[in-house]
Length: 92
Image 1: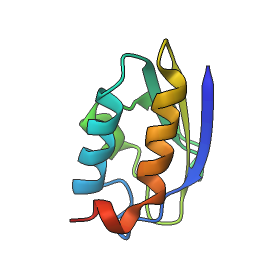
Image 2: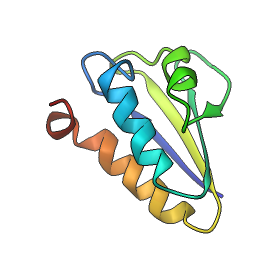
Image 3: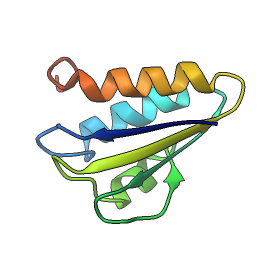
Image 4: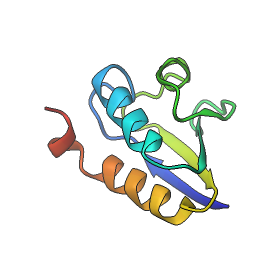
């Protein structure tokens, strides 16, 4: 299992378009990917479900924890880390 902790820097957090793009990245991998809002001490949810990702209400500057488990877990974590760190490119 691979893990990542990151700060969400999107102005709207993981809501609407950024959340949809986050889910799209997660769906590109066969691994089980889960995300939780660390700042609000939330529970892990399926990162491939837009409804669940929006429901954890991650606002700008809050931290998330992401886990990936499966045959492509390393690539999944790297892709999600890249997504979260390239905010300006992904807001369009």
